[in-house]
Image (cartoon, rainbow, N blue to C red; front, side, top):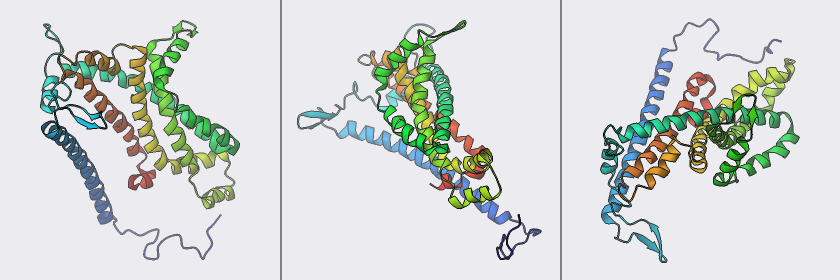
Length: 323
């Protein structure tokens, strides 16, 4: 097929063989991208400073009994037991976990636990990715499937994980496939995938449905079937919606893994460390905040790792980059 003569495929000032260098435009675009990246890092650092300043100002100015509304305490007492100074928390990270000889520094113990949880959350994220994309493909292909599945997918996120995690562990303990025995970390990965698949399914469905009718009709005029249209039109068009969904899914996978570790009693992860150090908060309040910092960093690393996919899909993420 050839384009009608009345349709101009290129601007009048440019031709196919034009050799005009696009250097200034590309350089300006590159500078703009670097500027936005620096601004994002700057705002992130400013947010951390603002949180630290608010914490210390509250300790300095808050009443001794905390903030009470109607006889209920809505903000804690500004004591060192409830709210240690931020510099005490960071200094505690450099000290040993216990007073025993050879005890590793606290930051190292938190890092090992965070890496354990990160690995389990990554497995859960991959499972959630496969499930979410599969559900999105089915719902996009058949409208009846979307009407039937989407409400249940949304409803699935109302189940409390604290109650659901022990059930998954109990079910998993009865599974034996050949010589493979179900491990406790697999139950945690399943819980992580349970939280991760929801934003991925919804984002992928919205992205697969995003191409305009004129574009799908153009594919029909080329006699393109379902799979060519999916691979050449719908998947590229879904990238601006899919990337935020993947980042949210990664963060949800970390949350699910931490909560599942607490509920199932899995040893070695950041969730178990939260419980262990919380029980020691009365004698060492700054220590209890170390795994909290580790969980925050874990979520940032998970979401940031998924953001690397944006580098591979940079040609398709223009809408997502400005949204």
